[in-house]
Length: 84
View 1: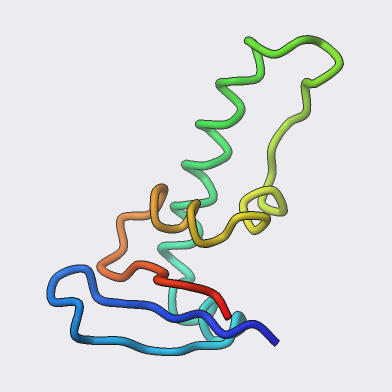
View 2: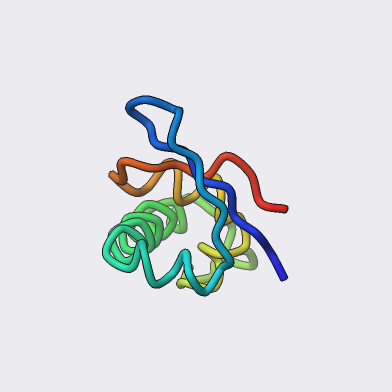
């Protein structure tokens, strides 16, 4: 079971460890925004790819690299420090 370590962006003193299920519950709104932003951003890139590489992105692609995508596509007060 993956443990997600999150830090508060403002003070970096608040640190929590959550399971993936708890993380999804707590950051439901931020995840929805991040996934939506990820899909829009990635699908804009499709027109520049060769035909054989074109694939519409979806939420499963977002979770492939959860840490980077959440940290860059959400506007949360928290960020993922690491996933153990």
